[in-house]
Image (cartoon, rainbow, N blue to C red; front, side, top):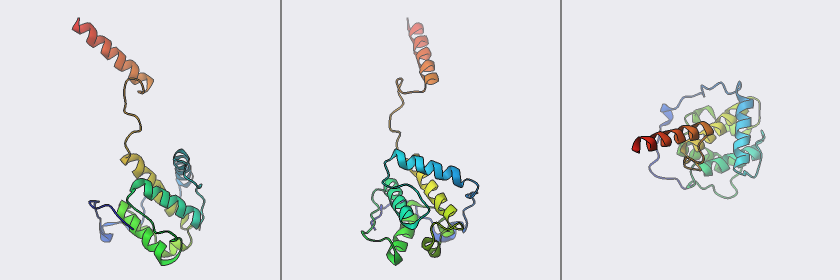
Amino acid sequence: MATTPGRLQVTQADKPKQDPRPLKQHLTRYTHEIASFLAARQCPIELRPTGPAFQTVFKFLINLSDPAVRFQPGTTTGKAWEEEFFTSLSVVGYPFERSISKSHLQAVGSTSTWANFVGLLHWLITLIDVSSPSPLPLTGTNLPTKARLTLAASASATAAVAT
């Protein structure tokens, strides 16, 4: 897997062993937000608590967050998938990497592990949203209505003072 140099690297000892977010309490909301995010970006598969669906969504999001990350073709099970999974978590700087074990990867959709995987995917979509540039620069024509009115009033006041 190729990675981008210059990313901040955090050691395993610096990462918390458990994800402190109340994932099970927010599972429905996080799942809905992930589904909306995926639909808006034409992800080829919907999020379901199965290994293959999770892998497809995970790889899709990792490639959105860091296009330099490339997965080897055919790595969907076994040691190669585990290595690529954990390496990609390190590349993107997932702070709760230690909350997901190799045995969790064997049972992605189980009731005891699914919340951790949804938390990971939700963290990834948040990372992508924060690091992606706004699709449109904010100008007078695409500002929210109240901001447009304020901008127009400000421009009128400036023009009146200038004359």
